[in-house]
Length: 111
Image (cartoon, rainbow, N blue to C red):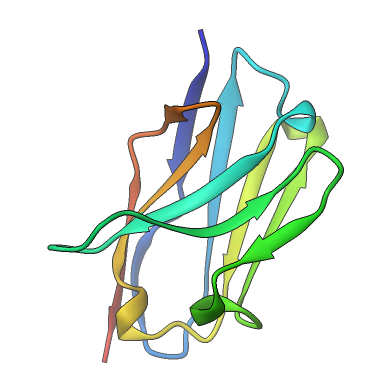
């Protein structure tokens, strides 16, 4: 059974940084594509960043240059480094692979 556990969220001021982690069990992350999504109150869940099994990455336009997705195969974990955070980045952040979701981690950016 595949399980994903996100962590690293919190409250940060505008311009601050956070690093989110997505730890997997029941699956070898290095062989799977992984996406980081976010959902703000009253909005649809959106794909923020993704990484393929060969390490190719992609980002939604609003986070390009600020967010970096990466993986640590030894730890079976995917990260989302978020810099220069803005209030509009406030959301619950989820990781996903093969239709499996974690429980999410709240990110709140104060103005």
